[in-house]
Structure formats: structure tokens, C-alpha cells
Length: 197
Image 1: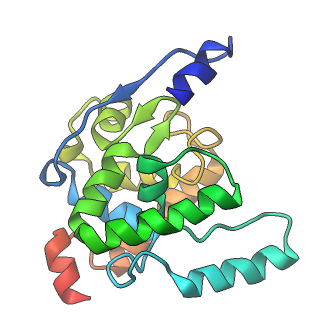
Image 2: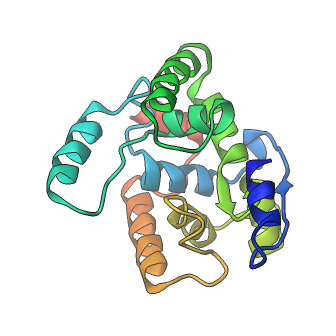
């Protein structure tokens, strides 16, 4: 609703809300691996918070104008499902609370399923299925490694970075993600990867 209101009052934006919830089994393992490689490589090991990443981000942010985040997939899921956009201490505190709850109650597969169904891949385009249909005219189950890495490459900011007309930076990020996926052994079943880690 927030996104639609923003679109209504901006003449340069189209009123668009696309979202199709699908189970994790219908989302390509390529995309599951791509978002882990791009957003949270310790997703299978941590319990909601990556304290090493938080420490590194804090050190980086002390000396740089370009701020670096350290939110895990679990934190992003908590924020997107239960909270609102913004950077207040109140919202951050609630994010910690909800992250703790979902990590306690949900499996990693459930967190990944919810994350890939609620994350925004473009203006008003939510979830893997809607993004796959919008950008590649196919179901999310059929996403290739290259398509998955391209989708994952825009996640830090789907307004600044675009799938339809990727910048040089987005293409470089896509290639980096593909390299990370290769380091992980290519596209693997989520359960198999968890056993191997």
C-alpha cells in the first residue's frame, strides 16, 4: 500500500503492484543460491544476526561516506513482513525482536520461502514469481543461473538498480554473484547445501 501511494503521487511512475506467492519448491534453486551469495553467505549458519558482518560494516561506516549494511536475510524478512521502511531506532529494535522470533519458530527453508515471496525486485514487483514473469516471461522455477544472479544483483536497491536495463555496476555485480555461486558448487538443492555446510 505504501508503494502504491508513492506511485499515485509521482507522475513519472506507473501504478503497479505485482505479487504471486509460490512455495519454495517452485522457485529455482539458482535464485535461492544467488540471494544467499549476494545478501547473506552465512545464512545457513547464523541465528538471525551475522555479528562479524555487523562489526565489519560498523568499521567501514566510521571511515566512509558510502554506508554499508549488515542485515541478514532473516532481518530483511522480518522487516519486509512485519515492519515499515525507515531507519529509526524503534523500527530497528522491533526488527531485532521479529528476527529472533522467526529464527526461533521458522526453519531456514521457511525464512527463504517468505523472503523470496516478499522481497521487492522493482517498483511494485514483489517476489520471485512476479519478477520472473515481469522480466523473463517465465515461471520462477525456470530461472537460469545468469537470470538469478541478475535478479539478486538489484536487491540492495531495486529503485537505483534495474533488471530491465542493467548498468555496468549491476552487470559487474551479476558476474561477482555468479563467481560466488560457482565457489559454492553451483546451483544445489537447499537441503543438500545445508548438509554440506
